[in-house]
Length: 334
Image (cartoon, rainbow, N blue to C red; front, side):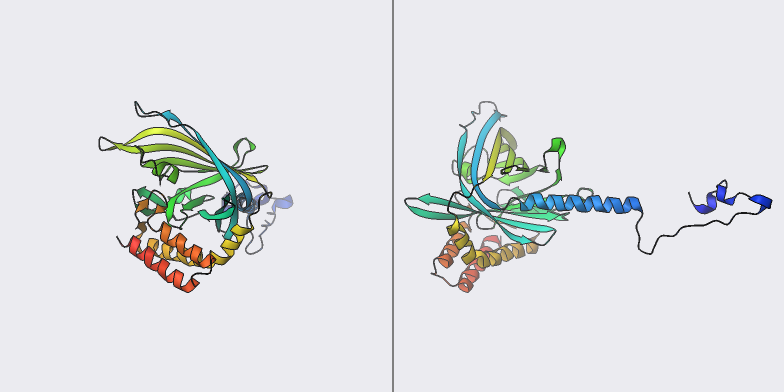
């Protein structure tokens, strides 16, 4: 209530002898916030820092298990494939932390025939309160999609990129803690087939999925709830449900120095590759690039091969960057 409206406030009643007692109005220092507002800011800041801690905690050395299970068929006559469990050793390294943006790079480290194999794996970018997010729009197409303003506050987008830093999928969501379990849950998003499915040429050609991330006492989990979709009689149709659980357990009992050595030699190159992809996306409000079953996109072999040549000392970084820019420009000009 405004001071002038308080007709019955005791401070304006006649005192002894009929005099009106002077009214004293306390004023806050310039720039001060009401206690409630300040408390709200403190809560938001604390949650922001807690969210960041959950994301940053994904970095480290891990033993990874990939558990993939088709469960419920949605199309009559479809038989779910056998469950598949695989795994390996993966390092996750922090590429960027600018406060409101965090970038993590995954690198697989494996042994085969007595040799160490290094595979630059997926990348995840986290952005706080994003205005837009790059989403999969169907075969060979990705577009920048505006995040509704009412869904930005306190939320994070996650954009996932292929091994060659071409786009894979993106979504947005909020870190919450129902039941005492921290988790980030995305909105429903489309995404292209993973290699494990694409190489089989199945009846489905994309997923509609929800993505979840949660820290655990020994690492973290990445849980994907996938509806596998395909064209049936000219209509996009649900084929089967899949539950995919990737478990990352902290593990330092495996030699991963080769992965770090690869990244030290190639991270500047990959930084320029990211810039080239970003430029193509901004120029077109998205990007069109042909998908390829084995490598994710048609640029995969070229861009990954250039990185290998840098790591092996067979090509200068500047020359590799120039070739990569040309490859990306050619692949996205349509």
